[in-house]
Length: 280
Image (cartoon, rainbow, N blue to C red; front, side, top):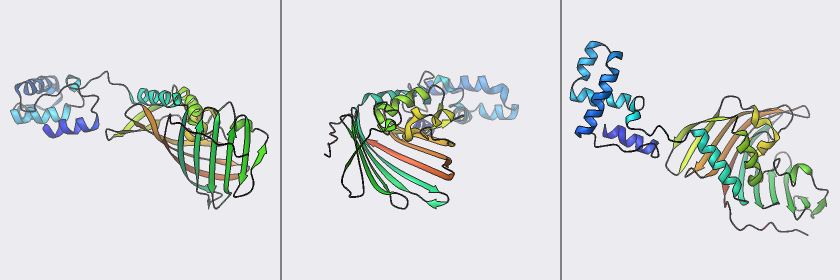
């Protein structure tokens, strides 16, 4: 029983209200009540064996996750509620950095790459590195102007790309992308996969079609690309408060080319004092 309790504390520390000593009279009384509840579901011979003190403890181990609403806090927040709360808290941090690693193919050829993101209010920067496909490029959105350069070429001032500017929801800027993602979670359910106390790991369940809409951004989905379909989404939260990692996979086509991709984004420095420098 002690091992079961230790496992529960490690897996769901927030769900345990209080658990008495495994050998205390209180514990044995709880397990005895469980035995009475479950007796009709077991064979007479098994019930007789479970009537012993050792058997009662054994049955308590088996049923502690099922009928042990006696031991667990049934009002603990759901996985979906935890992800939504973390999304809202992360959206409130109007600055931050993120590192995205992309494993992908383009018509069957390797198209792996990385994207470094930084944002502060409405200002944003992206450093893209796709060595097998596009090389390197940098984009900055500063004070209403868009700057871009490829490789080490001089910076150019471009007409503002509406998909990379003030609406925000189509960009990698977490402050705005997370707002779109928070809204999408009203139609997406999550299940918890792991909890190591500091980071909790969740996976989206069911229909992921909402992630194929532009409000998801390219951090949380396909960003609304035509003929692209999100196949999986996993989210890691820190202390139930902030989103710290996102992994999304999708398949689709672009201009007749077949794409597959898995993007893993590590998020850090949320709320930090970040300056996006004007390159001119």
